[in-house]
Image (cartoon, rainbow, N blue to C red; front, side, top):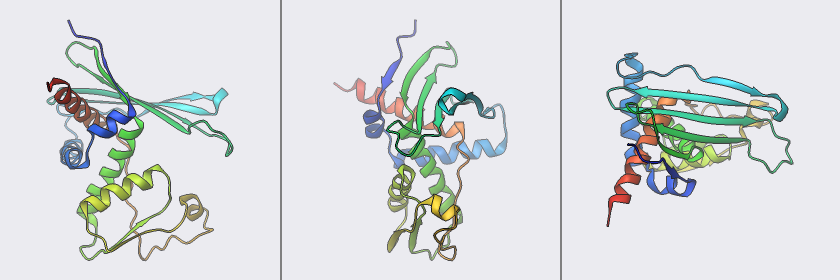
Length: 213
């Protein structure tokens, strides 16, 4: 009989998940997704449930990689908070399941996974599309995603300098310039398969650590 699920908290996810391991797996998974082969990867469109009373919604992002034996779903709540609110604007939880038995193998914090896999996907895009002579890393915004993008881009590439020009909202509202001559924006679709690959990697690393004497 399958055992109880493992609970992996935020600080453990941070300790177990590394870009050097994550990026090669994401590259493989995104390649499989591009081939649109349902025998390899199934990823339905994200389902949302409105949370009217709390000014938010719940998003469900499942993915199944049959040949790899990976079944995963992320539950993420988004909220339109007041500026003075101390409550989080997003909360994410990732659930990893055994596709044969149907039991939950692990429940883990989804915020770290979301930040790192999004930044890693952007870095993969940059590796394929970035100009070879690029010397300046430009980041629009200064939130959590800015930090994860800075971390992976400076780990993967050699830049002479990094610049944070403005809050992204100010750029969108055109109250501050986007410096388009220096900036290429890479957008991640936020795909469930990225969460699945990340969660499986975290779980594998957790098992490896747990098996050590």
